[in-house]
Image (tube, rainbow, N blue to C red):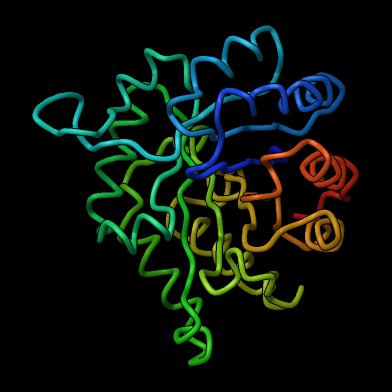
Amino acid sequence: MRRKVIAGNWKMNGLKENINEISPMIQLSKKIKTDVILFPPVTLISSIISKAIDSPLSIGAQNCHQNDEGAHTGDISPKMLKNLGAEYVIIGHSERREAHKESEELLKQKMLLAWKHELSTILCVGENSDIAKQSKTNEHIARQLHGSLPTNINEKKLIIAYEPIWAIGTGRVPTPKQIENVHDAIRSLLCNKYGTNVGNEISIIYGGSLNKDNSTEIFNIRNVDGGLVGGASLFSKSFLPIIQALESATYKS
C-alpha cells in the first residue's frame, strides 16, 4: 500500500520565532501513520531538525542545485542538504519553473543528484489557466513527466505533486472530478512507463489552495495519496486539521 504523505511548503516565510509552531506537529506525527514533511526556508532547516529529533517528522529543502559544488553563488547542493540532515527536496515547483526558467532536463539532473545523495524528491507538475481552459492539462503534465523523469527511477524516493498553477494561493480549486481525472492520468502514465508494480508504488499528492475546509473531500478522491500545503502549513492551528483529514481518509487505489 502506498504511503499517505502530507508536505508543508513554507516558501520564503519563517523566522526563528516561528520554530515553536512545529511542536504540535511533532506530537501529532508520533500518533499517526501518515508521513509528515516540512519544507522550511534553508535558514531554519538545522534548527527544526534539532527540534524534531527522535520524531517521525521529516524535514526537506525547497530546491537544490544540479551540481555537488562549484562557482554557483547563492545555491545549495543535494550533498550540502544531506550534510545538514535534510531527507527531502522539492523539485520543479511552478514558482521556480516560472521565475528561474527551469527546464525539464534541468529538473531531471537535480533529481538524479538528489537520489545519489539519498534524498527523497517531490516532483511538482501542473498547468496554468490557459492550458486548463484549452482542456490540455493531461497532455501538458505528460510532457512534464516524460521530460523530467529519468529512464531509471528510484520509486521509493519519488513523490509526484500535482499543483494546478491557477489554484496556488488563489482560493480556486479544481472539482473533485477534475482532480481525479489528472491523478488517474498520472498513475496511468507511471504504470505504462515503469510497469504496474513501480507505478502503483509512487504516491501522488495534490496541492493548490488546499485547506482544512476542503481537505477531507480531496483526500478521499481516488489516487490522491496526500497533499502539498502552502501557507496553511506555517501554523499548527491550520495545518493539523489537514494532517488529520489525510490520516482519516479512506484509501482508494
